[in-house]
Length: 207
Image (cartoon, rainbow, N blue to C red; front, side, top):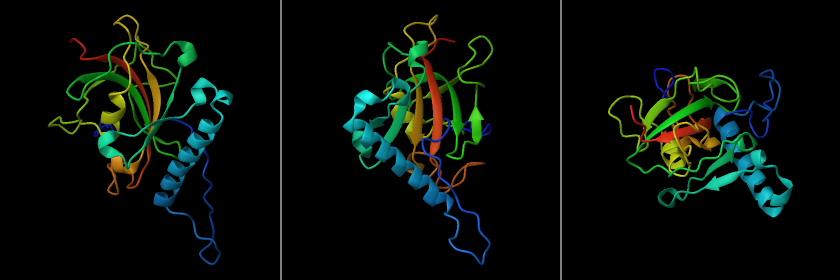
C-alpha cells in the first residue's frame, strides 16, 4: 500500500478529545495507540447499538462487520457510501488471485489524509485515474496492498459493466493489525487505524 511512495475515509465516527496540559498538570495526554484502539472500541459500541435497533439508522450510516474466518480475532467495520446516488455494485466479487481497479482515499482517525487517487466526495470518472491492485497483495513491488484491503475487496461488488462505474463504495475501518501494525509506514504512525473510502470499479480490468 502506498503513501505516494507507498501507494499505499472520512470524518471519524466519534471525535476523541485529547487533553493538552502542562507537564505539571494532570491528566497526561492519551497516546496515539490508546486513541486508535478507543476509536475501534467506539465502532464496536455503535455497531452493537445499531443491531439493537437497525430500523432507526439511515443506509449511509449503517455499520457492517466483517470477520474473516482465518482472522477471527480481527474484525473489520465498514459503511456503504453513496447508495442513494447509485453506488451499488452487482458484478461478481473478486477472488484472492484477481486484480481490482479502484478509486480510494486513505485517512487517519484525526482526519488527515495520507493518500488518495481522487479528490472530493466522489471520483470524477473523466479526470481521476484509478489504481489496479492484486487482491492478494503479493506484488513484488512496494505497491502491494495491506491485509485489510485483501479482506474487504473480496466482499465488495464491482459495477455491473464498464460503462456503469458505480460499483460498491465502502468506508472501511482497518485496525493496525491488518494494516501497518506497530511499525507504521512513511507518514503513517505505528498503531494506526486506517480509514479508507474505496470505490470498486472493475475486477480483472482489460488494459
